[in-house]
Length: 456
Image (cartoon, rainbow, N blue to C red; front, side):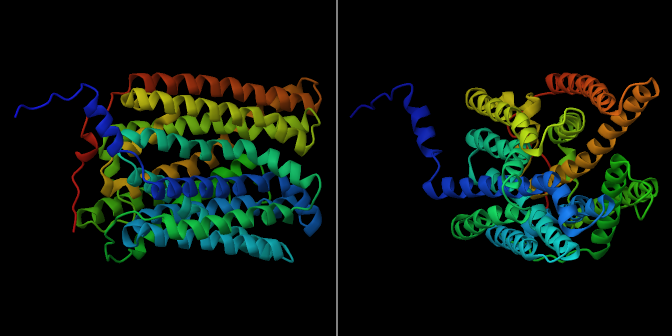
């Protein structure tokens, strides 16, 4: 009996059928995307609500800024440990802990009678956010096959990229008709739904490692990263006269302790006990795309940071008008990433040279064992660049606007001109990043598995 020749497209169709995601996996990915969007949206909405919170609770601007600075500090301390948590416990357990903390923090913020309790609620929220955000990227990467990874990671990247743009619009619309507590009341049911559905549907095969956390690593990480974030954020806010610790002193401490932390991890990873494994940097694609992501987030994030300040201070727009003005930018980012998702499905290698997909390329190049640590590294970079962009953007705007004021120009238009000076600097930064992205070598098949890993 002779063999029957298979049509040329049969192999491709069979492979696609095999790689079709199960309904359970699709639901899990949808929950991860929704929860990531929610926690980041929550982070961004407070900036718009801060003036109303200050009036309602009777606090000064220097006190109120701790609602955002404290949030950033908490995330900077917790994120480096998320790689260890994901390896120590199952992903569903870690996700449940993260969303439970975020939900509890939201409840505390809703019923907060004063500033201290509200700050506690924000810190508890930040712990949940710090765990949930890198976990989402790790889980999605583990849930989908290599050929579908670019598409799904692009969708998740949309959530993290558009939430900051949608945050001012949503917060402005809520604040125009209700108090600041309504922001948390709106977030609460979404968080509860994500918690319940995610606890049932997120099932990522894994084998937890029963390793102990290194106390010295936690200390070095907490002091080092919080010092850098606090120093950069305080310097950028231009409130050095109100801060408890000098921004320069805090950054100096951070610059000493972060290398000590990295050295400790290099020592511990030899026995596979590192809190944050440094081996992802041994992968050329990961290291290069981490640099690209850092530069791109600093330049683009600085633009988004200055935009609401310029619109409200120089042009007199209300918070709602500011949010609506920034909304098209978020929609544009969403469309660009959707176009990028189509490109990924046609040419998977293209994701290694697309600057907007730097994060996807960096994680896609890693061995699965290193994915939690790679995701934690990228999110730590995101927090550091978040503080750096505040410092760089406001420093350039302040110095440029001061020169215009010295020349006889009024304060409001001078701030607009100062912001434009930063936009010019940011454009040159993006051009340089784009050049690096275009010349970055493509990842060869199997490169992600080339990093030596000790598996117990």
